Image 1 (cartoon, one colour):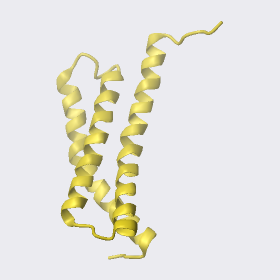
Image 2 (cartoon, helix red, strand yellow):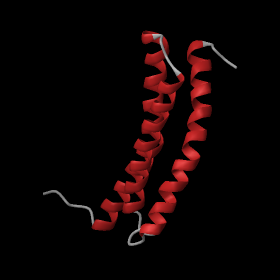
Image 3 (cartoon, helix red, strand yellow):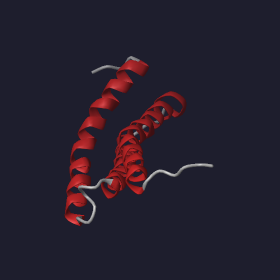
Image 4 (cartoon, helix red, strand yellow):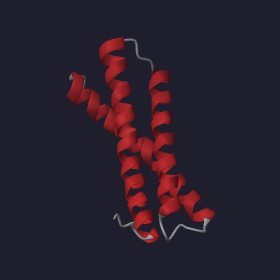
Length: 112
């Protein structure tokens, strides 16, 4: 017989998974784009880099919203969720930009 977790435990597990996804998913998305655009395709553009950055940030923002929805402090407050997602959207592009510079430097030896 299987035991189910109480609702608060399920919510806590969902919140942790969403927070991990908000960190890992944008990095993985940007890494795959950077590797394929510079190694296999070869014809990368600044516009393509910006689009990939926007897609990565939007994926992370969706995960961040899910995290805020499953966290007790944010539940019932739309403004708190908007502040959490808005903060993520402001901070994440800067961090992903420096990560992309680091990735290209390590993976391809093209350092600034």
